Image (cartoon, rainbow, N blue to C red):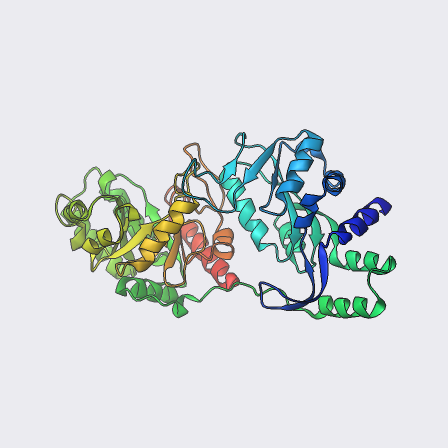
Length: 448
C-alpha cells in the first residue's frame, strides 16, 4: 500500500487531479477533475503504474492487452513491454481509409484480452469497448482501472460477469491526499459531501415505442401492433417450401409483429401462396417483411421490386435495402416501408464504424426509411431492428453471432428483435415463440 501511496503523491504533482469547480461532460458541477494523461510524460511513473496494474491480475490467463483510447494507451503499451503480453490498439473511431479496422495488431479468434482503462464512472463507455473487441472474436474477462469514481461503473461490469480490479477509488485518493496534507479538512469535507450526494452522470434513456417520432405509416402501424400484442418479435422464416411457410405463419402469427421472408428460397413460390399468406397476416395481425436486401441502382431496384416472379410491391408491407446506392435509391419502394441495412451480425462483417455512420446518415434523410438493421443504438427518429437474437446459443459455424433479448434491449436500445432458427427449428413452435415474445417484451420494459 505504501508503494501505491508514493506513486499517487508523485502523480499528483503532475496535475492528474485538480480541485476547484469544473463542469463535467454530464453538466454536473464537480469540485475535482481527474485527467491521467500527464502520466504519459513521465516514463518513471508510467513504469511504476504498469507494475501496480499488472499485480492486480493473473497475467498467465491473458494473451493480449488493449488500452481504452486515449489516456490508457500509453499505460497498456508499458504493461505490454513489462509483461511480454502482446499489445493490440483499439481506435476510437474509424477514419474511413487504410485498413478501416477498429483493432490494430496481430491477434487470433478466441484470445483473451485484458482491457486497461484510466478512469471509470458509469461503465457505459467500457461496455461499448468490450462489445467492439468481442465483435472481433476476442474474449474479455478482466479489466484493470486506475481510478474508480464510484458512480456505479464497477458494479455494473461485475454484474455482467467481468472481473474488474481498480488501483484506487476516488475516496481512497482523497484520504491519501489528506493524510499527506495535500488537502485540508474543509476541502475533504466538501469533496466527500459531493461524492455522497452527487447525482450520477446523466443516464441515456430510451423512448417508449409510442413516444418515438416515426412518420412513415408502416412504422406507425408496426408500433400499434406491438402495443396491442405486447410483442416486439419479428420471426425470420428461413424455410424453403410454401407449406412450411404457411404452417409457421399460422402457428406463431399471434405472437409476432412481423414475419420476415426470403421469397427467393421458396422452391414452390406462387401467387396462390401469397394470397393465403396475406389472409393469415390479416387474421393474426402481423406485417409481411421481405428481406430481399436490395442493393442496386434505383431503376434496377424498381424492376426487381415491381416486376418479375415475386412482384413484391403488390403484397409486402416492408422490405430491406442497403444504402450503398444512396438516398434516392430508396424512393422506388414507396409507399412500402424500407428497413435500411446499416450493420450486419456476422463475424468479420465489412460494415465497420465508418460505413455505419455514413449509412445512418443516408437512412435518416430518406422519407422512405422508417427503420434500420444494426447492432447499436440509432437516432430516435428511426426504429431499430436487431437480428441474431437467440436465447440458448452464442453463434453457429457460419459466422452468425447471437445476442440475448436482454442485451439488445438494454445495451442497443433495440425496438424489435429478429429471431430465426431459435423459433422455426424448435420442437414446439407456439411455446417457443411465446417464450421469445415474453422475454423480449419484458426486456424492453426493463430498459425504459
